Image (cartoon, rainbow, N blue to C red; front, side):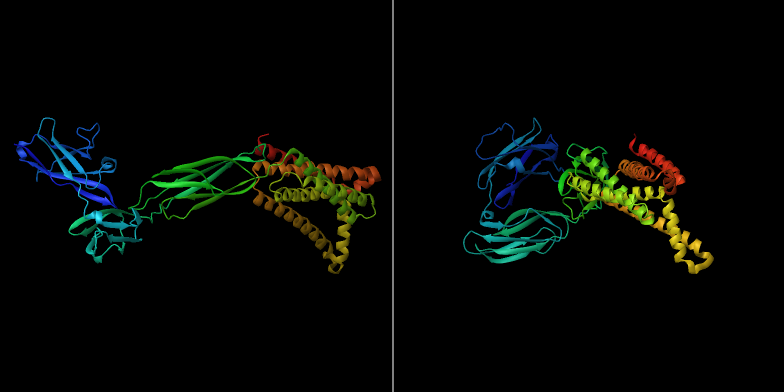
Length: 499
């Protein structure tokens, strides 16, 4: 005849709360029992059986020994409390024998054991520190087994004031701390995590900035980070990752193979930092950045270009006057357009510019480029004058004087070109214009501003002194070269902007 015997259930406490209940027993004789699984149900408290949804486990039988065991945890035992009754039902198949038995949940003397500040989770090699006190009156001797193979720690004469216990776990895992009091084993769970779990993740950060400006002078930016993790042995295989832009969390995700974090938002001009964090690990953050170029209103663009034209006319007139002081109209042009440039400068600068250094840097290299090109096209007499000055300065060189003079003029031209390039390159590096914006602004300087300034200065000279004097200034071949380059710049602008 098949017989099922239940043992007194074993409990594990977490503090003063029941963390688990282990049900064990025996069944036999082996050949007389018509089942390989036992359906075990428990009920705590006074509610009569059967329950509507009692916690039930289908438990395999170890037929080599005729024993069985299962553990109830969590919500299954939420209504189970110390010193209350627990009813256990074990059923061998649908038609086989069954047994129902009621036990008392015996927490004493664990109820007299106060364990405080014991963490649920710690990291490897962290110092675990908690307090143990005996509240059953007087003092008693305890033994603490940390469950990791280390020697048990004896605690003598423990009373209500308690003692402090310290220990260090060196390997990740779930451990059962057993404190023996008056020959009663009181169990406490602790989870030791491998916190040094840097996934060695590679974060490839890219950004896509839209050309168009929004009404609030921002631009839409899409930031993408491809996370490629390499989990370490013993660490979680799923890596958590978070994306922060300017210290604001914008996206998060996880994965054990390469995955992507993406965010699209509107951002003002300037640099923006991108940080990829890996929560739950001590991995260093991965960083990146993206830059948004300046958006200007139409009013601001018109005022800037007007300032550029006035400043360019003034500077071309000044340089021409330095080499051709007999033509006093150049001094008048310089003075008049300098005043106009100052007026428009102060009209332009208060514009709604959130990154004010960038429009200023833009205007600087645009004026320098337009002035240089415009001066070259009107510098015939200036070069003749400069050449004469240099011949006189190098008279000591004899027949080499002309060569030295021409060499100095070439060096001066190359030096000016280098300065303009450095100004342009600094603007590109700090203000991150798109390709379209680069060629649009080059076109503004080389074609628009330069042409207008050249026409103003050349027209005034022609109108004042006549064609003969104007011919003394104008270099037709330089103008042809300018026109060809201007057309090339126009084509590059079309390629970059699509229009």
